[in-house]
Image 1 (cartoon, rainbow over the protein chains, first blue to last red):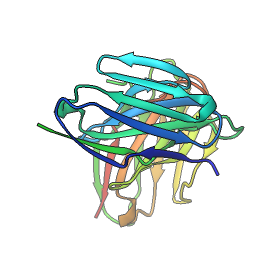
Image 2 (image 1 turned 30 degrees about the vertical axis):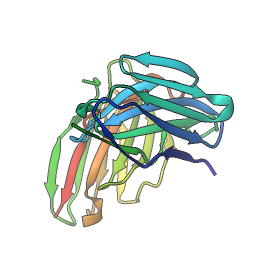
Image 3 (image 1 turned 120 degrees about the horizontal axis):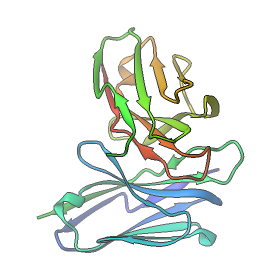
Length: 111
Length: 113
């Protein structure tokens, strides 16, 4: 069935470290987004990236649609990067006009 | 600020009651989506409206209903509330009915006591 899997489920890093978060999806996609849910519950858009590579400051993302995965890179982590990172996918299936969320990666940055 | 406005931010109500959550999409967005996030859970899709018409439905309970009005704002009605309905309810909006970036509101935190 249609699935979105994220790994690792949890990640604890020292401030200044780099990290790579992965999102695997089971079928062709129309849309892929990365979100950061901060400790206050807000969902913040990081990237809209159904294919290709984008960078925004210390964050970058790559989606290889033909191989059905996306990667989120965080460099020089800061404590404010803590929270849960979600990958959300809209599959290219008629009648499936919605974002399906992965279960998230909980990132904890230790000072 | 995503431009999506949800009210109220917090709501505490008793079991058996009915509440209405409101969402105003970003200017120019025609799609509205509703999601539920229970404690330490992922985001579960409830329903999607595009320009007033229902486009997709998730595992939305029969006690829940939604609609999108001509001015494009949307309301999610939750009735006969149970303790398990306590959750963070998000609204999102996007320009088109598919394939475009979605932006989320700050959510309504519902507590049923």
